[in-house]
Length: 112
Length: 114
Image 1 (cartoon, each protein chain N blue to C red):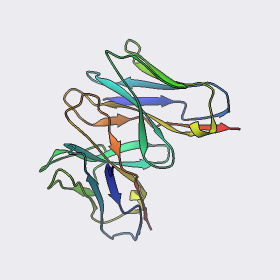
Image 2 (cartoon, helix red, strand yellow):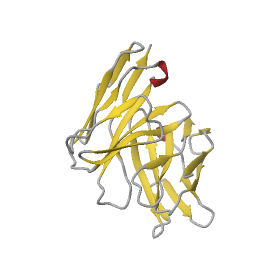
Image 3 (cartoon, rainbow over the protein chains, first blue to last red):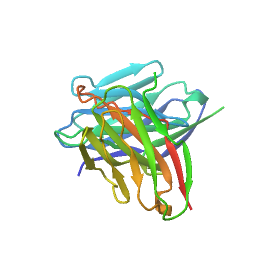
Image 4 (cartoon, rainbow over the protein chains, first blue to last red):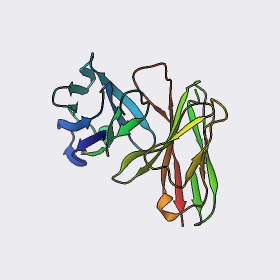
């Protein structure tokens, strides 16, 4: 059964800290893994990682994919209170499927 | 830039009542889906559609119906609301022409069943 597991489920850090969020996956015929940020409302897209693109970076956020060990990490450096959110990891289900399977998310709280 | 529009944003129902959550997208996306989000449970897929006239069940379909008569609209119907259906519901869509799988989400509809 395809699944996506995130850890930790919640995390509290101080502003300026660096955090690492984890996502492990078991997905038939892996095609991509996506990271989303959810603040008060709808999830917003952060990164997509594929077999041909295993590292992405945008400002203080970066993500890598380890296809051999079947996991991805999302790093946030110099955290700010605006980084407080739920971070969701997702992957399309098996071959030919269009549905995204989401992990339970990591709730990140950044305190001043 | 409307994107994915959901209505209503908030709704309170009594047990046994029925209602429809509306979802419309203006991006000509073939794929549309409904998720529910509960604390500590992440996003769970209820139903999805890959085009007009085609729908299928997701992970948690019981108690919900959908239809897709047009590319733009994908309503979610609760036939007889139960307290277990108290949740935040998200509609999401994407183009099947991309390999990325990126979904575009609506703002969500918070439903409370008493």
